[in-house]
Amino acid sequence: MNYRKIEEYFFKLLMSGSLGFILLLFLIMISVVTIRGIEAINISMLTETPKGGYYLGKEGGIANAIAGSLYLAFGSTIICIFLSLPVAFALQKEYSGKYISSFTRLILDILWGIPSIVYGAFGFIIMTYMGIRTSLFGGIFVLTILILPIMTRSIDEIIKLVPVELKETSCAMGATRFETTVFVIAKQIFPGIITGIMLAFGRAIGDAASILFTTGYSDYIPRSIFDSAGSLPLAIFFQLSTPYPEVQQRAYASALVLLFIVSFVSIASRMLSKRVSRNIIRGREV
Image (cartoon, rainbow, N blue to C red; front, side):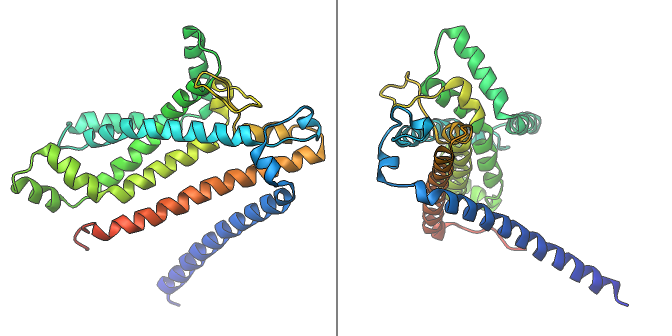
């Protein structure tokens, strides 16, 4: 009996089974949300705000939640880009010492694992102390802090994959460290930056606990950054909490809209990433 072949077959079977299980869960989730929510989706639901008696099964839509989620996700993601990129580059050995970068990475990993409800409570305390009521501003502020470690650590790990020879060649040609970072490394890791942005965006648009305390909820589309705003995750929560089947069906429709937005942005970013990765210089294969 060849134990090595048995071991190889066992792990192949385990990997295939795990992959099939994940794909099956994904298909079941998509099917359930689609089947239960597709009947409730119509033009009025996507373009109208909730009207009187909406949560009792009356007329109206989720335009307020769609707009609020997009404002929150895009606002926090854009701000986080300008914060994460400098931090990720600063963590490299060219700019910081070994112990400083290791300690900073540890802190970022801890922040990544903190539950979002803690961020919401922290943001609520800060807003209360400063006399700021629930608003888009508060939600964007907390979501930026929430996704900062996600985007930073994702980009940081991608930077580590840049071939050392590429950096050395750039410096040998007379480029400064700053020029090498901006014009060589940043271009090299651009697909990875897009991936990090997408991870952060998906977390931001799908989080509910942090914005419950800081953004609140409103049935109207916000006209100012200091107005309260609805969001799709909270819309799903409130709709499922009602005892009316019509409203519960709208919750699945809201989940389907959220799923569509995330899928669209993910596919678009993947296409963009493939388009720009043609000019990427690959490291030496081992």
